[in-house]
Length: 257
Length: 257
Ligand SMILES: Nc1ncnc2c1ncn2[C@@H]1O[C@H](COP(=O)(O)OP(=O)(O)OP(=O)(O)O)[C@@H](O)[C@H]1O
Ligand SMILES: [Mg+2]
Image (cartoon, helix red, strand yellow):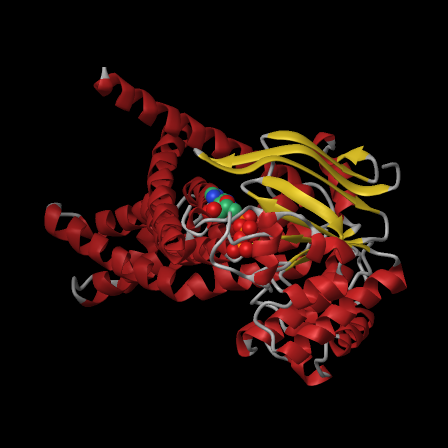
């Protein structure tokens, strides 16, 4: 009896949370398309979310590209390795690793920062104060962050693609003694517009997930500093899991045929 | 009463199993200053948040200018909120904005005023609460608690609202500044014909700003009357409160709920 009661309570809590999230997403999206628009705030968030994430994403991509090149070289047979390394690095980075690892790194950085900022605003009643000053908090706080993240994540991942391939190139030509010209030619031969594009589409979705999870958990945080800390953790964990899940779904849709 | 600016009818609110408002009935006539007194944690702040729509009551009706605010849709409600100014108990200043931007917020975001024009008004309002223009360039974190309160007050009156809520306007101020603030509230009501609802524990403040006084206890209004009657209320609860006695009908259960 108590066992079922516990299960029932957990399921109900989960459904309530999903309902709240759906409502939140609906509010956010409906405000994206309705004026007034806060361009100034969007630009500010583009700087914060996009520009300042560049070093983190670049370093991640560089080392991932390098490690990938080594793995393929050691794992595959030595025979023909020069073309295989270049092509698999290009494919792996643009299709999966660039967007996913880039997304996860930005999730750690940005979801946490958004949740902490909005969470503090919630518990110090600043979000309530917005309402009393005739400013819709969704419009003023959520929309700029969501728009900025959706716009900047693909740009970040595009850079990650370039730098990741460069990472493979550096390792290939220095450690593995490949010929630079041949490596570049192999990369160019295998790199397809569709692969890059699929990664950038994924990145846009990840940007949405990152900003929405940060805002959602910040908005619903309660109970002082501890509550804000919990919101921050929940934002990062849920954003990361949703990114990985969404990546799987999108991969199966985008590469179905 | 037909000239009621704000009217609460049988408003109930509970958080979990904790009953906070248990059938509040309260009327604030047009152009009057009502002061609500009552012990800590008796639901005074929750009550004004219900009127502002920040907290949704479980039961009851709230009328502003004869319209039930709980039945309004989002755009009606936003329009209705333009009439209000609110001083939050904790200040709730936006810590990412400078002091003058805080004060001018309702003008810039809510009324779409040009920044420079709004800044002039902000500096004028700061002067009204005894703060010089140089304070306008500081950030809230750089102010003392009393200064933050005064900035919050300047922000609440910046848009010349018809209805102003003051949640403990003089708490944490020295007696002289407190008197300046009290005088300012009195002037607002006279100058603008504003209707005000204030919450305070400060009896000097009550005697200065109140037209009428209401006392809240255990989620109900237990006494209401004109300021002159407060010393002859014939109500033991009111007597104990205004004289600040530990003994009386209000036991420690109010302090330790
Ligand atoms: N968002 C909330 N969630 C849960 N409980 C709340 C919430 N807001 C207020 N409460 C509870 O409601 C009660 C009344 O709170 P309120 O802030 O209205 O007190 P108050 O009368 O303003 O007290 P004070 O004079 O100390 O400011 C408190 O016991 C508080 O714990
Ligand atoms: Mg209070």
